[in-house]
Image (cartoon, rainbow, N blue to C red):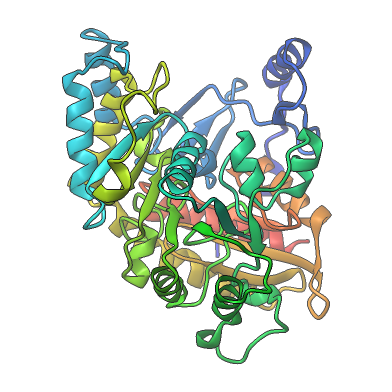
Length: 445
C-alpha cells in the first residue's frame, strides 16, 4: 500500500461552500438534510464520471453515487448529448398526449426487463413507483393488507412511510403503519438467535406462519414488499436462495411479491437486476434512480394481468411522461447495454469486497463487511461480542474520508454502516486509490 500524505487533506467546508450552505439554510424550510450539521452537507459544483468537485475547487472520488443514482457515471457524454438534442425538440408533453420519446423509453425498458414483466407504468420518483405498485396490489381484489420487512425503505409519501421500517419518521408525521413488519434475513443481527446454516433461514417459516395461522393476526394479504438487498437498512444481503423461497411462499398463498430494485437494480450488484442472483421474477418490480442517467425517472414493471385492470386516468401526474427526462433514461439504458457496465460492477465489486475483508476483517471496530457488486457495506461496532453500534466512529470515518477526498454514504438500522455504491463506471485505478485511503483511515483510528 502506498504511503498516504495526510498533510494534503481537504479542509471542508471551504469559504464558497459555507456561503452556499448559509444561503440555503436562510431560505429553506426545515426538514431537509441540509440542516444536518454533523457532518455538514456536501456542496457540489460539478461532476464527471466518478469524480466530484466542490465550489472551492476541491476534488473527490465518489463512493456514494448520489444515493446509488450515478450508475452510468456522472455526466456521461451520451446522456448529455441526448438531453441537449431533446431540449431543442420538445421539453414538455403532458401524459394525456403521446410522444415518440415515451414510446422509445418503454421499448428500451422492455428490452432489459425480466422475462414476463411485459407491462410498464412510468413514474418520476422511486416513491411514486412504489406507491403505484402498492395501489395496484391493493385494488385488484378485496385483499388490502401488506407485509414488509424491518429496515425496509420505500420512499417518503404517506403510504410508503406507512410500509417502511421507519417508525421515527411515521411518528413525526403522524402516520399510522399500514403493514405487518417481519424481520429481514439479517444474519449478522439475526432476530431468531442465529442459525448455523443460512439455508435454514427462519424468516420464511415466520412468514409462512403469518400467512397460514388463523391466530397470527394477519388478514387478507395483498402483497409482500421487499428489497432484494436491504439498502438504507444497511446493505444487508440475504442468504442465497431466500428470494426464491419467498417467491414460492407468495405463490402458495396467492400473495403478490413486489420487489423494489430502485437502489440495487440496473447493474448495481453485478447483474442487470439483483433478483437475478436468485433466478426469480417478481409479480411487480419497481425501478428508478440509475435508470434516469441522473434525471428523475422511475417505473413499475409487471405481468399483463396485474397491469391492465385500471380504467383510464387512474395514474397520472404533470411530469409523468416528460420527454426531456425520458431522453436521458433512453441514453442511460443504451450506455448500460452497449458498455455492459454491470460486468464492471461484478469485477470491481469482487476487488472491493475482497480487499476490504482482507484488510479490515479483524479490525476492532468492524463487525461485518458484506455486499454484491459495487454495493458494499461496512458495519461498525464498538463491541464485537455485543455488536454495539459505533455511531460516532462511523461519522468520524465519513468525515475523515471527505478530508481525504472520498465521499461515503451511511446506512443501517442504527446509522452505523458505511455504504459504498460508486458509479459503476469507476475505473480500477480510481477504486484502488479510494481503497488505499479508506483502509488508511481505519488503520489509523
